[in-house]
Length: 548
Image 1: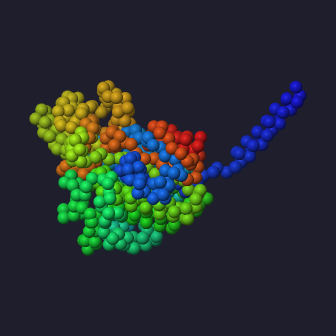
Image 2: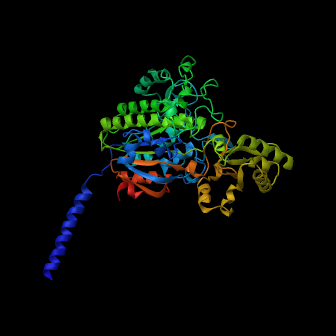
Image 3: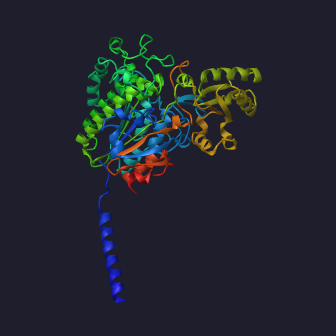
């Protein structure tokens, strides 16, 4: 009896010693966390072009990191601003308030751009493209929580061509966010972050990287005939962003140097390369990953979205863009190894949304498709409402597959809002391509599959959403470009199934086919960093990623 008691006593002592040792060990965190968002990257692009991917780009993450194969966006609309916000907040539009790139705000009685802020000024240029901040986002981000956890010693920076791709991920407490100014061909910021650009940013801007890329023109990396994963070059249903006289490879970009057309680089793969040039310079000059506390860098590649909108996911342009991006990523990962050190950084790669096939392409292959012209629907709806209720402009706008009614005008003229909503629903459901129309505030009463209903509910923030939600038929898109190009924004898997890869310090190797959501990215990272989740987070930590 005494022997057994003594053994138990020794076990307790040993456990106490081990426990005491563990609690006294410092918290293990990577020196740098890098978030990469590839704007408009469908999940299948990880594999569609993989025969030509190098071993050091996407394949490095697939082979040495962790892939979540079934990652979905849990809300609509699946658009850039909402996606970037969701990734870094672990929240949904119903909570964080970023219900689209643009939306009408009923409390302010005006249309808003997601990151607009007229109270701040542009830094780095004389135009208004820098009047931006994260003030319209209602919750914190991973970067904000990292700041709080380290008493604001961590450095947090966001970088993208698109302002919303830099500002919203970086969060409210970021040291800086930088985005591209098409008018000047430079990276700018706003007085929300600083009064003037750092010297290194000014030096980068003076180097005229854009002209250097334009000098290269854009031709395919490989013989154009070898792009067997894509449609033929030059199709009538593709856009011509480089001019109507340039409908196929090779594209002459040199012509844009003298014209001082700095914006066209967005529609080339060199926009991604430019973003990485700036990112690497930022890491060096800001000494990211060299501080006592963990630093956080949020990078978004915007050019994939511009190219996808113009040429569609089945184009040679898109394929060549991803082959070039793969090489850029290989170079970037090697840079991180040298600058920060293998094992000292954690990285994730995902997308803010996918993209639909161009209806013209689907038509050619006898697959369900069609276009719905949102601007025309808005005009036709207003005409129908005027005919029925005798008042102009009862519909303020159509955004995010929603129609916003002029509630103030309805009240002033003594009209019945519910009757206007009911009439609008009947009108919209008669239009080609619309599967159904629903009063958004009574969504829970609709006869929809629960999975769809949850996505729409997660996108509903009352003050920034319309009175009526329309659901398009599968294969139909909102026609932005007169029958050319493609878009995204709906609940279907081609818009909502995204890649998700983790790599580096604290990440186990492997893959999982378990269904997870975009909202799970933030809590997975906060678990790794041992910090609090963002203030609106509703996701769950993906334990398999962390080997738990």
